[in-house]
Amino acid sequence: MSRPSTPSRNRNACPLCGKPTVAPHTPFCSQGCRDRDLLAWLGEGYRVPGPPADPDAYESDADGLDSPAPRPL
Image (tube, rainbow, N blue to C red):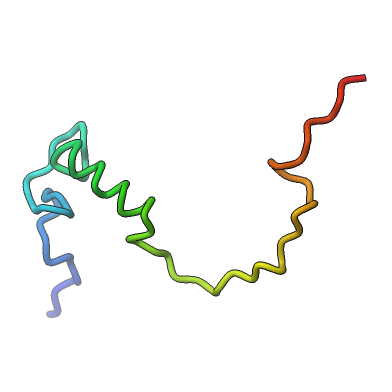
């Protein structure tokens, strides 16, 4: 019978350094590894695949967060 596919790392190991996880920082072992992972996301070290963005598809004058707030009556 074939074995189900499982990650090669231990489920209770930090994905960055491999040390055992600690409950307040799960799935990481420490605040340091949590911060390293966040910085990797913010610095575009990780990317989610998808189609390329079309810069012409967005209008700068469209309603949204950059729109001025409505004036009270």
